[in-house]
Image (cartoon, rainbow, N blue to C red; front, side, top):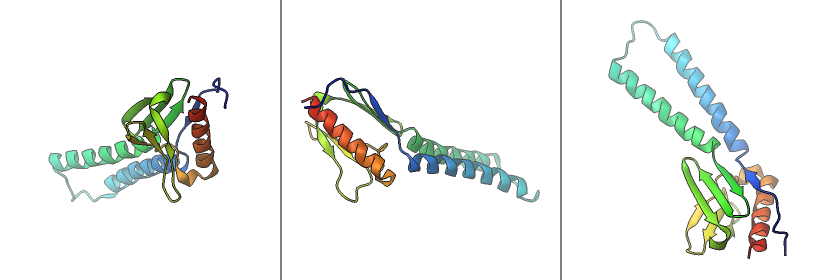
Length: 144
């Protein structure tokens, strides 16, 4: 049986987070460059500018959602943020963690068969993702 006095742990996406923020910067730079490079004969109405701005904001918000995802474990349970949605699940409510070969991230399965994606633990992060899953399972075993 594992030690219940384990330190808190926190995981965030690695490569996916960096890609999201780099793409966001590139998108902003391209928007500015294209806006400056357009000839003066091309004009936009106020509604067109508002539409373009809202589309840019929506894409940036989605990219930021990837970057702000996390999984935190402590003595009380698991807290998950996937984009803009938060979950707090007590250890007693967790049935297990599943991640089959080829899946992009693990899934937390509750005793009520509710499934919560752990988007912050990306399979593309390789050994870090596998180690995180092992750690989560050990902590669950320690709390049973």
